[in-house]
Amino acid sequence: MKRAVRGDGIAAAIGPYSPAIESKDAVYCSGQLGMDPSTGLLAEGVTAQAAQALDNLGALLRAAGLSYNDVVKTTIFMVDLADFATVNEIYARYFAEPFPARSTIQVAALPKGGLVEVEAIAQRVS
Image (cartoon, rainbow, N blue to C red; front, top):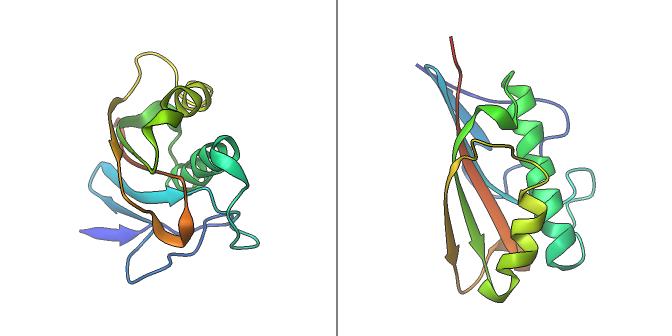
């Protein structure tokens, strides 16, 4: 069984996909851009986009009844790995030890001209 996660403050999908899917005890969160869910506009610069992307991820987690502490794996997509230290600094404000497993990948481009996108898998502990 799977169900789409829905709730207030969740950015609308910009394609034929769900922002998050809950299946059994896991929640699979699609990549979140640094887009303000109320305006649909990207934040200015990589620092603001990273924070907004993680805020958007938090909204998905809350809608599923979870928190950042339940995240077991993240993937960060960045247009420029020169921003790695900046994104790490923002990321560290949202997650605590033990930190989720993580991959960081440089990509040629992101939707809407985004600079950073964050996806995650969270596990519900019964």
